[in-house]
Image (cartoon, rainbow, N blue to C red; front, side):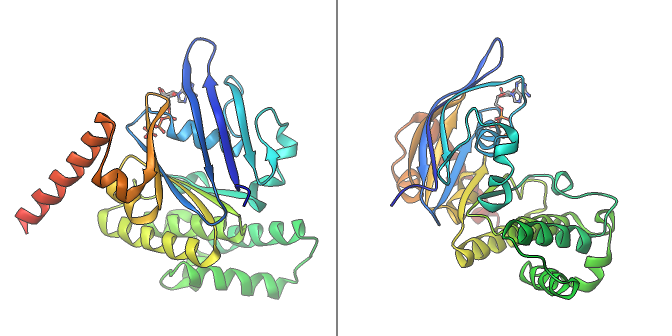
Length: 269
Ligand SMILES: Nc1ncnc2c1ncn2[C@@H]1O[C@H](COP(=O)(O)OP(=O)(O)OP(=O)(O)O)[C@@H](O)[C@H]1O
């Protein structure tokens, strides 16, 4: 089976610094991969490269084949059809995806309309409304009708992230990139959003590239994980193996820290 995403020897540099180098991995349709590493290790830049959204000042080399299309070196207008149909993203701060001056329901409706136009269909107003209601229901928002009428600042951070997820879902992408989607939320909301993402990705058969600095969080949602450090990929494998038999001292440190945290938590209970 050919990969949905295949990254080979990716290098990202500015005029005077190599920020990411020698990254190679592939992701099959429906597969869930975690990208883990400390702050500044190059996770977000790798994700932005896959989305074709790196700042213009950065030079990219290597190959990123997404759904059969080469992203490296592609013109932005050639990538527009890929975004939304093949790939969508959810970021740490939901306000990056939301328009502060537009009601939540209208924003989701906009994506539903755009997606159906790309499929060559024009939906009637009532059909759009029904699809928006269905999406808001699927992301388990309380009072979906009130939230559909609300502006982003009138709902909570967790609700905003759910709305951003609804917009990504409305694209029906083959691959979802989730870059630290729960970091800005409190612990209970984090767990709820993780569960929601996991269910949706499984139900839709979407591929997932889940970025986090938190190994236990990655372990709950991904099948395989890639560990990055200082712009390089230092270890990868099934999450169970990484947890039980980490090879690189950095990964060993991550596992030890996660275990120590678990033990401290248990002792406190
Ligand atoms: N626009 C930019 N210009 C120059 N350097 C940048 C830019 N964006 C990121 N970097 C640098 O590239 C490196 C990788 O950054 P990146 O954002 O990918 O890290 P990360 O692993 O996602 O970190 P975090 O977990 O903190 O988000 C860092 O050293 C960062 O300072």
